[in-house]
Image (cartoon, rainbow, N blue to C red; front, top):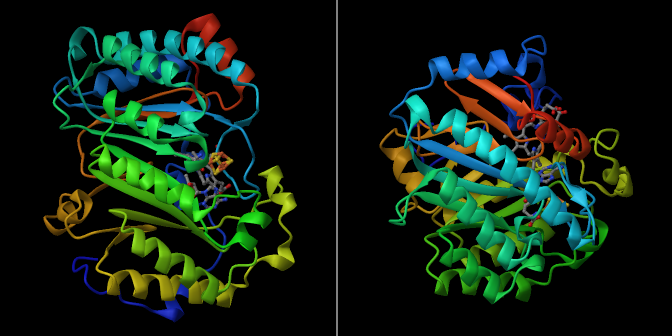
Amino acid sequence: MSNSSTVRWDPELIRRYDLSGPRYTSYPTAVQFDPLLSPERLIEAGLATADSDSPLSLYVHIPFCEHVCYYCACNKVITRNRNKAQPYLDTLYREMARSAELFSKGRLQGRQVDQLHWGGGTPTFISHGQMTELMSALRSNFNLRDDDNGDYSIEVDPREADAETIAVLRQIGFNRISLGVQDLDPRVQQAVNRIQPLEMTQQILESARSEGFRSINMDLIYGLPHQTPESFAATLDTVIGLSPDRLSVFNYAHLPDRFRSQKHIRAEDLPGPDAKLQILHDSIDRLLEAGYVYIGMDHFAKPDDSLAIAQRSRQLHRNFQGYTTHADCDLVALGVSAISQIGDVYFQNEHDMGAYTRAVESRASAVKRG
Ligand SMILES: C=Cc1c2[nH]c(c1C)Cc1[nH]c(c(CCC(=O)O)c1C)Cc1[nH]c(c(C)c1CCC(=O)O)Cc1[nH]c(c(C)c1C=C)C2
Ligand SMILES: C[C@H]1O[C@@H](n2cnc3c(N)ncnc32)[C@H](O)[C@@H]1O
Ligand code: SF4
């Protein structure tokens, strides 16, 4: 789409593609990984094609959540035991030192980190002290910017943060934030086990604004149990009233055999394909009317947001994490199940916490396949 003020809408086309296929959320799809290459050979191949001048993008995965949201398809560990965080961080530090040595030392010395993202799970599950220490460790291993000109973002669950958390995040160097909202309807929230009153989201949003975060994103999901075109329109109107800089509106992927907690969601409570299509259609119309620009896939942004500006100047790029204004970065990803991209090669870390920990303990790397 070159001209962002309108979206061409072709119901025929949509029906034709209303099939299950490999999901776009995960490019490359699993089949494109080659399990036969050893991790060492992979890393060599990536290093051989890596560009020594290109900036770096860093991703850190923090998998813990205190409560399970039934719909969730993310790689996470549900626990109330905060003592689990430190051993994981210790493993992460070990992996980090090795990754820095491989990808930011020697020939690749000093590559500037233009993009940093902490995702999860719930990154704010760890304590303020642990977050501060994690950022310091990243700074001492990689060349982080200190001029606030990088895109340094974090996923925040409003139920797991307060004004002080937001202040700490800003202080340690984050300038973008993404809030998980999903749906504001109490009935939907109940059905997905995620009770999050509007006031909670509002408070975190206000804190983020007053701390000077330059971009605030919110995640919504359509297709959740008990949603109707009317109920989702109400959620969307309230969200538009909150005026986030960006909005992600994800299509709920219901795969209960793969994501066990989705078995708590009854198929008969889900909106049917027609209702879902109506919700999507209404949402796009409503967002365009409210002045948002359609970036592509699930993403919308205000016209003055860097993604929208990049789209107009044709500088918009997509990697497997989503849209980005950074074309040329190699991506170094740390943590359980994280995926890196160095030169022409993708690497995936061990998915399972035990396997990840053992791999880092024995060889300081958890790359499983690429
Ligand atoms: C942070 C949350 C999410 C991530 N992925 C999804 C969410 C909500 C969505 C998702 N990811 C996968 C599926 C399954 C679909 C299927 O066809 O089976 C769904 C609904 C699987 C998946 N995700 C990634 C890969 C490579 C795969 C397929 C391979 C596999 O089975 O392991 C990559 C990936 N997942 C997330 C991110 C941020 C990401 C890329 C960096 C998290
Ligand atoms: C990272 C974001 O992924 C979205 N998310 C989590 N699980 C699913 C799913 N099964 N289908 C679609 N989106 C999902 C949430 O909106 C979360 O905030
Ligand atoms: S949606 Fe976020 S908070 Fe909920 S289970 Fe998934 S990762 Fe955890």
